[in-house]
Length: 350
Image 1 (cartoon, helix red, strand yellow):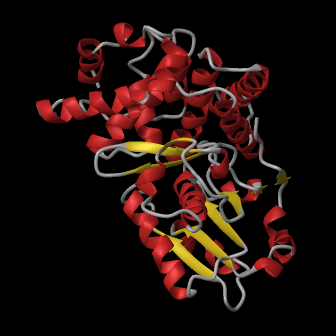
Image 2 (image 1 turned 90 degrees about the horizontal axis):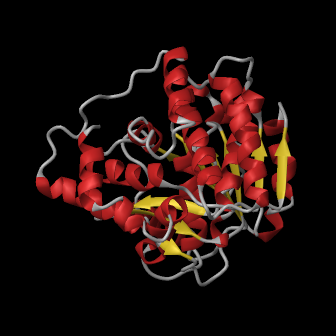
Image 3 (image 1 turned 90 degrees about the vertical axis):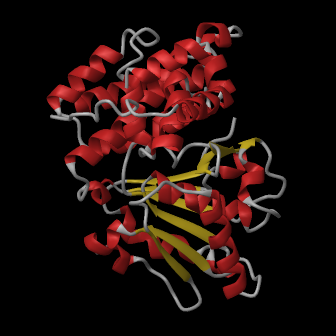
């Protein structure tokens, strides 16, 4: 069971980043990936880069990370630096930016396209050391062993211990810019991680403890019971750790189809799917509806209304590729429980 070796937590932690990075500079230059949203917040101007470092401002507004994007970033680094490798990669932003940082760290030391590593434990060579600094809370990428990427016909993670960060810095002050709807949707990604992990058969005692504590913090935040940004940041980390010690479930398996075919961002896709799955998660979906109401969130309606037969087929095929989550959630006969007719019926309700 792999865990993040070092976590720095607390308000004002980001101000200590220069000191933290000094220990890595002896091994080479540093690459920073920072979400483009921080051009507006000003955080991009606070990145402690030095001469020789590379800073990439990543636009995450139009799509989630793609394999061709990772390959191009890897090639750009190698060309710019004449194949000299960095001592550290730092990802600053939400789940997409952190997943990009994870994936590039792997692809700088592994041959071929990142498509080759979408799957379970396919990474051959140790990656470049990497650090995650979340400025959104909910994805759990800071604590998970997955870098989720989309390619031409699938959305799938580089699921490996090699994807995990070597160090994570969590500063609740970095969440102050997050808007209500964005905060809600990323927070629900965490809540759904906890639900799927705790209800699945793959979970161990560590995972259950993480999931239960994270669920408690999430409900405190989104049921308006006095939850803070500190609570949400801790919930996100524990939620990622819960899935690392368990597996996702029906929600994530189906939401990947929504994201792949319709282009919805991961957290919103999760919510679109989750509201239709009370049959599988009867204790938690009603709580989710209450959270929607209390936070004044309206989900998109009729998103699958105009799907062609081919698009519906693509969504079903993508769901069936998520065998481990479905096995954890439904057991050995998951294909009988969630057959194609049943899947199409659920998707059609969305």
